[in-house]
Amino acid sequence: MPFHYRTISWSMVLSDIRNSGPTKAEFIAAIQAENDAKREAGSAKVGMDRGLVTGSTFNVPTIMSYAIGEARKYRQNDQALTWGAALSRALRWAWGCAAAARRLVVPAGTPVAPMPAVLRRGVLARAWAIFRASYAYPQVPFLSIGRDCFTWALKRAWAEARETVRLAGLGVEALKAADAIEPRVRVGLPTSYSERADEVAARHNAARLRSVAMAQATA
Image 1: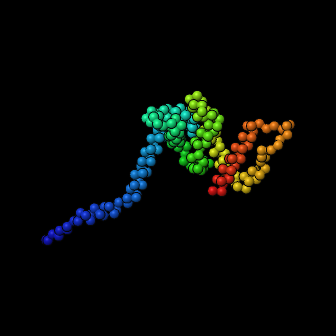
Image 2: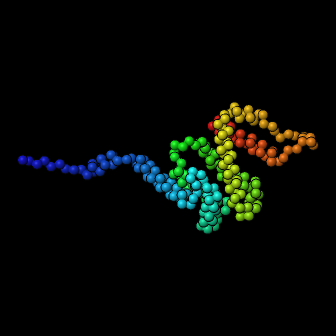
Image 3: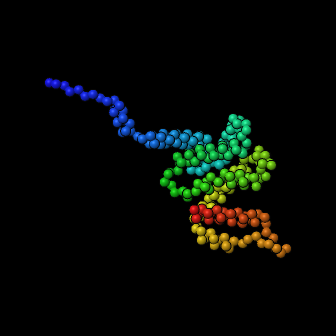
């Protein structure tokens, strides 16, 4: 009985294996997804181990303490790094870890008011602006002011961002109507009328938030 021999082309076999597997783009995307998952898990572990969240609530004092410690490490490793830059980097890292830890607690399906990325990115810059205006930083050194004051500024910046989201949800027409009836700073006030500086500042800030919200509503 004759035997029939088949020659195997290993180049064809390897080519078939390559063609049946993932493409280069799919492979890179899979590696990226795996790295992102590892980073997320590592950040969440730091957030849980450091107590950056309590239940589903951010532990702001602990986040600030952790960020201060990380900022000191950054400056030890890079003497040219300013304290403001080191603290900004450390705050981003600390809040990222806290957010990752909170995602383990809060279900993904829990409804959360969406925060536009442009507002989220501007919170830290706004916090520094509030901090500088309120405490004469950097003329007064950060250590002389204290991290509690920056925590207050950061909370206020987040509150402004949330208020901007709420105002944007009212719609452009409602914001235009509110802006039209808002009293402006009066010129030539009689001596019997006085207005406190904090009231003027609050009114100007409210007008600024409406302007930002109107831009978000039309975007």
